[in-house]
Length: 115
Image 1: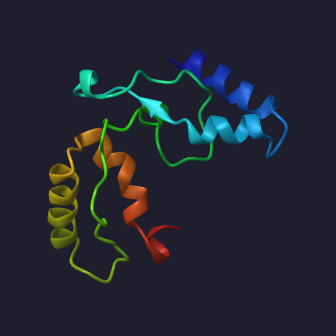
Image 2: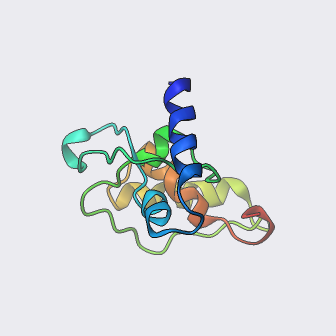
């Protein structure tokens, strides 16, 4: 796995900065899933080396038809336990799983938490 990560990082860095090819690699993030028959096949493209997500999560595709209602936001001013309960319920009710929860988390963070 380490060799694959190094190869992907090298390929990404060799692309022209800000190129359409580089942007396409960032947009097409995909990875493994608990329920593979409900997800499109993973896209074997380089990953975004600055993403907070692991290579595996970047390669996890979103569940087919996954469209959550507005995700609860967390900015460190609310009770984290209450936030997590609402966040998990929102993802689960939209048909998401653990991978979906991890990938969606960056969208739920705001303010200093997002930084």
